[in-house]
Image (cartoon, rainbow, N blue to C red; front, side, top):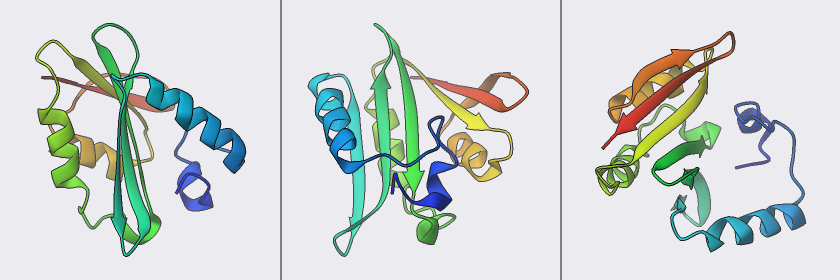
Length: 129
């Protein structure tokens, strides 16, 4: 999913990543036990993933990517809701979303995120468990 041209335009780093550097990044990412990384496979193909990244002692950022063939189908919702429900009461979880990405804004609203600020390009939403 990460290198799908229809998907990487949504990322802060919106260029392709070599598989070797991605493996190193993933290995280092998973060393932090507070990080959560969920994937959904259908017929052996990853169709979406969600990450909950540890930013500091009680702050996390969530990031998602969905294969264009499955965007708008809402198959992700139960797993994303479970990720949010498993959060500790003291955690604050944020998401950065480009203003033009209305679908993601609606997605995060459906799992109880609320707007807390915006700038010229993005809105920032958070979820407090």
